[in-house]
Image (cartoon, rainbow, N blue to C red; front, side):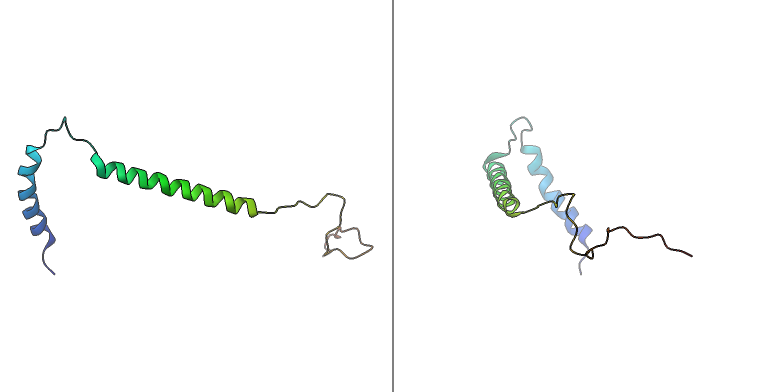
Length: 85
């Protein structure tokens, strides 16, 4: 595998003169930045819509305090005695 530092330094020597030509006061995100931002906004909207649909399917019903649980035997109070030992 070739040495990556040599290719990076070679690329930097070619790109540094291009960077000096760019006026730092006129640099803007441009069309590509807008497209990326818009795509992220659409993705967030789709995720929120999906989450809302899935949360609507949740059916949580809390059992009232007076009812026994199905695991309790009939006639028992549902309380356990402490272990003797």
